[in-house]
Image 1 (cartoon, one colour):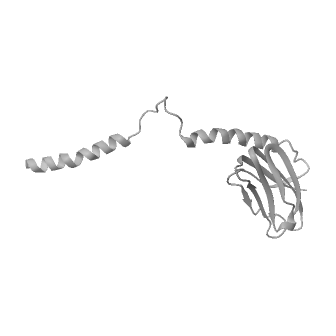
Image 2: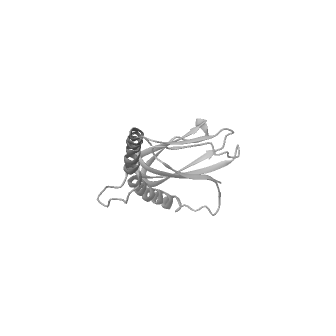
Image 3: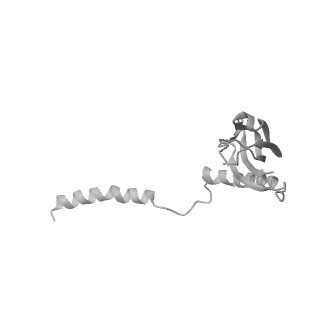
Length: 154
């Protein structure tokens, strides 16, 4: 191989080696703070457990659950649960965190609009299923935490 080709090849390989060394995984540094994504999941897990615990204090022995879930307040609950038209249901919502949220139905006459404080209080409302019922629980400005909800057939 000619000397100038060897120099050219070595010059091209050096940046690749340096780039690989800079991006390779390394042992975690215990002095470095946790990534924001990891740090955020711990409070979410705690708030989820609190919201679910509060929701589970209500008995479902006499009823059957039609739909349920847990969502971030910032994401809200947005669902079309596919309920039996004309049937009556009970919606239970609890929010753990800070601020408040509001329950809204489409069409509006399916159920009342209700506030939900994010203090782990249970909020109940009765609703009559419509063909295209939509449930929205929206966090108010600045609200944070987790919303647990359940729809039971009565």
